[in-house]
Image 1 (spheres, helix red, strand yellow):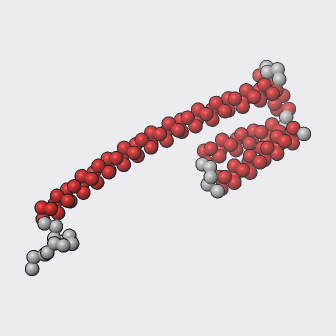
Image 2 (cartoon, rainbow, N blue to C red):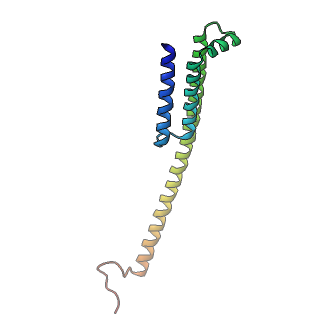
Length: 133
């Protein structure tokens, strides 16, 4: 029964990730990670003796301990990767905010220069001013 649940879970994850990928709701680099996870769960569901073999090879006494250890390592890796992505995004946001502030300052300076030039010329194109005939 638990094998069928594992296989069903892997298939649901695969279908969901592929749907999200096609609908552009997830980026390819994240989809690849989830596809690898789903395929790993599917392989272990189809061939549960692989987990027993890995347990014996690594010297782990209980297969569930190996499975949980691998899950913890996977979650630590995902957490580290997402922290790195967040740091990159924060740097990019800060850079864009600085560029926007510089552009805003430059725009204000240009508007001030235009105002000064219009006042110096007399601003004939403004309403209420009479143009020389």
